[in-house]
Every structure is written in C-alpha cells, then in structure tokens.
Image 1 (cartoon, rainbow, N blue to C red):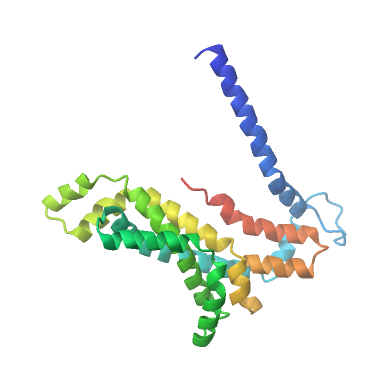
Image 2: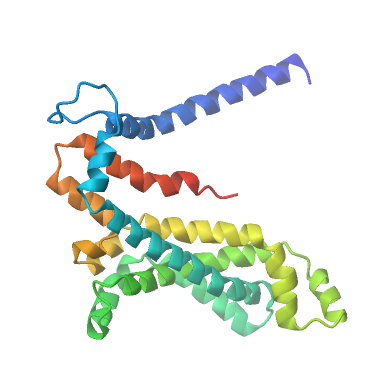
Length: 255
C-alpha cells in the first residue's frame, strides 16, 4: 500500500468519525440531561441517578416497558414464523399465483399504515380489541408482514437450490428440506427480520395512540409522551425516560 493510499484511508476515517460524532450529539445530550439533577431536587451533585430512581419508583415506567416488550417480542416471533415459509414460497415458487402474490405484497408494502388505522379501529371496536394489547399486536404484525416476507425471500434466494435437491435425493420431504436446509442456513436473515419487526413495533406511536386508552396499557412511546405533557419542565426525568426507551434500539443492531 502506497503512502497516498494510506493517507486517503485516514481522510475517509476522519470524515466518518466526524459524521458519527455529529449524529451522536443528540444521544449524548439526552444522556447528559438524564444524569443531571432537576432544578427542584435540592441535590448539589453535578450528575447522579436520581432521575432514573424517580421514573422507576414514582412513574409506571415498568408497566409501560413490560407492555412494549410483550407486544414487540410477540410481533417479532409471529412475523418471523409467518414470513419464513411465505418467503420460501416467494423465493422458490415459479408460477402465476406466486407472481400475483409477489405483486400483492409490493402493493401492500407501498401503502402507509395510516390508511388502514381508522377501518381497523372501527372493526376492532366491534370485537373488543380496542384498548387491548392483543389487538395492537395484530396491527403490528400486519403492518410489518410484507417487508418481513420480502426480507426472508431475499435471503433465501442466496441459498443454492442444489442443497435442497441433495436432501430430497437422500429421502427428505419438502418440509424437512425447508426446515433442515433452508431455514437453518437462513438464521442471519431470520435475525435481521426479527430485529426489523421488533424496532418497527417498538418505535410506533401513531397506531398505539389510536388503539390504546388506559394508562396501564400504554406502551413506552405513549407513556413518554404522556409523562412529557405532565412534566414538561422536568427535563431530567423526561430524558431519563427517553434513555429507557432508547436502550433496546441501541442493543438491536442488524448483523
């Protein structure tokens, strides 16, 4: 490697480092504000965990966190369980029905979720799924399903069909070839799909604000907004609650 090549690499590294620093400035500001004591706390320390103690002891943060985790984990599991075989059909199938199915997924994916929120609300109100975490999970699964199927199909396209054919020659059935060959080699795609559906559900505010009414059923985004409306001047506590919401996002990075 010549000196010019090394110098070019250092310049690219410096530019990436600066861009990363700029992007992380809001995150750092949230962390710093969450550790600074409130104006009326009477604490002389510059930094501390008093805001986190307050939001976990005096605010139903654990309830909101449990609701969000339950809905998002269930959404990720159901989405992957449905998207894996659907993606396999999309990847291996060669027929008009599969082509129509692929086109339908593309059309559904292009539609914003807001177009279905009001009709779903009216339907769920008739069957008792409004202000219900199960109903919210059903909406999340439906909203993320088309992209999840495309993600699984795209990854399964990279797995050679010859591996399945070898398994069929050895006596494996179609289902056995799918589970033992394709699905086992699609674990990175499964993980990416699960992370995507998890984050889509975790970050949602629009659907949750329409379907949820009771505070004990709030997810964390609705809880943060409700807490901010009541404690708009207590920035330390608001930022502490925001840090709690950011934790799963920072720990869920696609492979």
